[in-house]
Amino acid sequence: MLRKQITQSLFLAILTGSLLAAPANPGWAGNARELAPGEGRDLVIDNCTACHSTRIIMQNHMSRKRWDETITWMQKKQGLWMLQKEVRGKILDYLAKAQGPADQASPREHGNKMYRFNYPPNPL
Amino acid sequence: MKNKKERGLWELYRDDPEKADAEIWGRKTDPLSRRGFLKKCGLTTLAAAVGSTIPFYRHMPAGFIPAVFADTTEEFTIPGTNGLVVLNDRPINAETPPHLLDDEFTPNDRHFVRNNGLLSSLAESGDTAEWKLKVDGEVHQPLELNFEQLKQFTSYTYYLQVECGGNGRAGFQPAAKGNQWTFGAIGCSAWTGVRMKDVLGKAGLKNTAIYTGYYGDDRHLSMNPQKVPISRGTPIDKAMEDHTLIAWAMNGKPIPPLHGFPVRVVTPGWPASTSIKWLKRIFVRNKVHDGPKMNGYSYRVPKHPVAPGTHVAEADMKIIESMPVKSLITRPKTGIKIPSGKPLALQGHAWAGDRKVTAMHVSNDFGMTWVQASLKEPANPFAWQQWQATLAFPSKGYYEVWARATDAAGVMQPMVVPGWNPKGYLNNAMHRIAVTVV
Image (cartoon, rainbow over all chains, first blue to last red; front, side):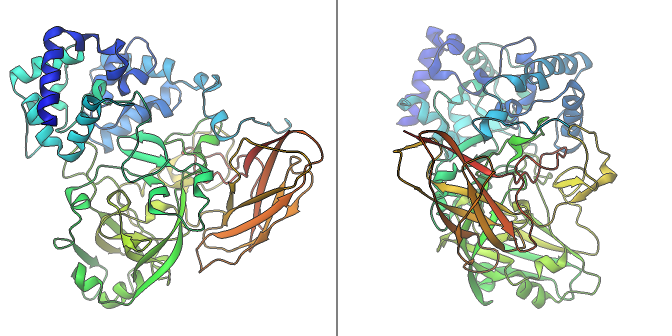
């Protein structure tokens, strides 16, 4: 019943091509839409969301070097597959830009999630 | 409001991912690798549906909803939870806003959820008949207990604080890697079970036994059945304390699937990763346990304090033991507006890992002056403690109320985020709420 409805509506949607407009349809926006736009985003989705969702990617802001170390750790310890050098490079390009340390400055970033205002201590 | 079609897809996958795969995409699961193999027509359909090719479809695990279909038009809510803020949906990680932790002891649906992997079918089965606990390693008499045999030991019910080692991680600058918990990765529920020391006593510890290693039944994110998502333990002394439990009930009910059904460890006052869920094995070690997430940088902080952002060598890291002193204001909710002239009643909880909290203070002037709160004794060791205070405000305006707990060794919470470390553990800086007097 419910499954049939889903299968039927998906099938219809595919036939009519409406699902090809998925990115523009908020009903099907999904996790993938939350990653900031940028070159290499598709590679990140293809390679980095088989195990975990995009949310852990988006929670983290690191330098390219530390993202690189993180990818190596995932390959060594968590079963991530080998990446072609070019693919890895493009993924790191994306992460360094969209999830780099500089991104912390934007208003939605974590510094403001803990407290409404930050009161930096007096510099030494 | 989610429409029927969107909810249905998620529910379908949650209930039976392999069947969902088969029905919607014609995808069969390879029993060995757990990868989902799409029949050719299925792949074409799926590719058309996502609007692009799927170069790595061979690697896609069975039961995985392609990200583009995972519905996040509104906040993803986790069944069995009530008002939690979701940090991650795969694996599921969610924390409780402080004002929803106001209950004296944390109800099941308000306890934070932390997962390193995916739930096994046993977790959601509601059935204890097949469950077994192995106790082996440095013991004279290895044990294999079923649920009924476990219940033969004397049972105890304790209110026990369970806090994620990374609670507060979001406060670190530069950012630390991992789930960005703010204040809500803490709970104190009533746990019922047997003492770890009684089970280990039955097995008989050899004098070479120095550490425990706990194994749970969660599934690795990669779906590789050989990989263990997490296996941590503690020095044997901590395991042998009266309040370290092998628990089967949370607030008097069977432990919910996400919290470790049917049986879990509760190691109160230490990082919650030592409270392994879906327990199936206790491996008593003659050395520090070396399961996944015991090593490297996991649950470790620098041996010597470092400047923020420093790269620390693995050899210079030490394992976290007791959590530090901390507190929360659970009432009122931050952002409250109150009429001028009336004092404000505040309340919350305080805890300090292995130690007791001996004093609680609040301030509404950036810590220039402090008012002492009344502080209750813990219901039992390792329970959090309730506190209450009243604050008067000198005039209209915007204020912050800061809350500071002091532990039995005289150690207070810091005002700023303390002790930067690579993975962002142990941020016990004071909780602050915003109050506007109108």
